[in-house]
Image 1 (cartoon, helix red, strand yellow):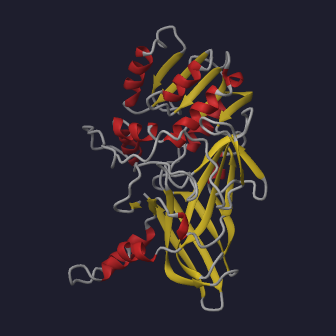
Image 2 (cartoon, helix red, strand yellow):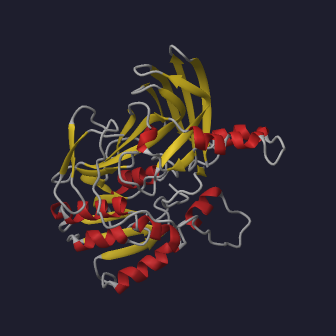
Image 3 (cartoon, rainbow, N blue to C red):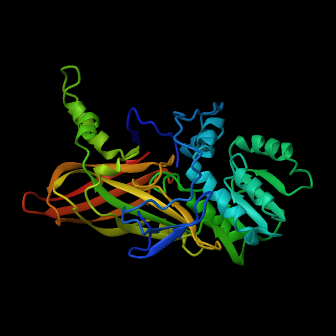
Length: 397
């Protein structure tokens, strides 16, 4: 994936408005009372966020060196989470971390005397929150080398050796828990474009193997949205740049550059259309294959403008809480380390207010490396000044 140069917000190697259009959604604020907002349609942000943390600039995560010639892309995925830098970035993402903290601390009735499984525990921060909320026991599963640090963190905070938190190092699909069932599964599994890295399937595997029949998955809802933006300056810098590189024609690279989605923060003033709900996932009920889908969309222009790219983003909800809680990664919401995903169009679309781009998006894990995502977009515009119909493919790597 590409990233906008000069971006002020944090970057990782990872991994809308609200899914209920036309209704009022209430997400508990990170420190204050719940704030009512219109389901986003890109109208207002819906956040559970502490005002204390702003953007972090951490750069790329470092990758551990392993003396093996047989490493797969999955190995590199886990290696990337062995370095503290990527965890620092995620922990400093106040929207992300404070939302989880508030979900746990403000809903202790869910956790009191319950057995919790933390999938992809990282530093163990969610496990520590659950322990503080009164969980009977928390099993924190982490595959990367960060599991060793998590064990030390748990011990330092007095929660190991007969205490509340047990850190288990290994893949969810390969380990065995000391218990037959758990009451709650909690995980921060979301990647760029929601499904990049394919960690969702790991959560679903854990759910099917260990969760009791009336158990709780947190978060339990995630929705992916699409909108369209004007982005002439940066598209020119990223794509058209290859037409003339110090006097040489390197335009053969343009196709590859066009196929690579850009992860970046989009200015809300660039938005030209409404947002359209592509997919809502119910993590407590969905099947693993449901993360692959084809969804139709209709994006209606809210002003006369040019369109250079589609933009995807997601919302996450914790519906089992006393009050609905969650956050949005949309352009009108407070910035997160997930930012948004920009998919540049081969055409520059000239669109008039009220005209609509109609089409469909197909999303599926890459067959060679399921942690990567293949995206196909079919779209057409039959406007007064522009008529176009095209199919474009993208690869998130």
